[in-house]
Image (cartoon, rainbow, N blue to C red; front, side, top):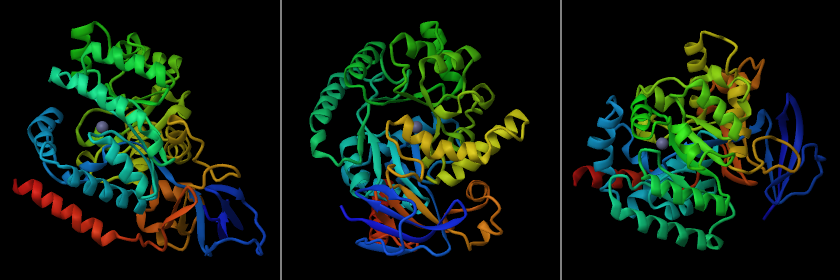
Length: 418
Ligand SMILES: [Zn+2]
């Protein structure tokens, strides 16, 4: 792995040289004469941690703008799932590459991705140079014949991990409490206990989900998960919109993490995350975009702003979810939720960073760079994106962009014409 010198880069308002070696920040104050295989002139560019997307479904970029403005279950059952059934492997790879392109452009270098064909999705994301958390999905509530094959596929994936990039973090992904049978969730829990990988699951996205769970089990979705041994410090509960105060206390007691997904929750009118219940638990909240069809992009910059504004709006409080807090959601908290130590520009941490243009009108006059990134800037302010010490975008240019867009359009055409 080569080394890289970021020359004259702005870090905390001062110009410095940053040396990256073997994928980590080796020095934040390297000499001008420091030797490196590549030197980037970073004059007028400020370095910040890159973003980590704690929940998405990458191939759904192919359904961006398809069947907007519908109620969640109507949208899923009558529009999204029938279209997804038409995806072949080539489409899934084309959609995933489009997602990577979009993530890189918006400064994201990690995606916790939940989707069918997870080995191919994981391989595609890491081949594009991003980090990825992926793993088997368990979704068998509507079709018993899926249970055994899903466990077989999972074991096959875990047995093959040595063939994957180091950028992959394997995970266990039961879709939801309503998506898998109780016996399946119990078996998933045993698997999680044995493997100790992160667990990602949609929880309490809608009021209907909570009502159904109460009717069927006598427990809220969080209590139900806990009764199965699936609410642990390894668990990332996605959405977590409809929760009681007791649910919130249970989440904290178990040390579970929450992937807050504000744009998708607002677009699907699912409700507002109860930010006020978690002001003493901010380090365990991370941020995700959800899939492109319910967002409709993968911009963590937008997600941070919406997270902050939704909380302020819902709780009529200007101080809640400040720019600094939501910036941490999108960076260091995402890393710690999935078990790696990225998310800060510090010696010894993974060299995952973005270089932002301080001369952009959106960043001027520049009183507070985190405030500007959260509340003002868009992706046009991001000049360069680096993951694991490798440059994924420089000067706004990503190699192969035109081909990725062409193939995604071809797949979308094939699906819609079927
Ligand atoms: Zn989701």
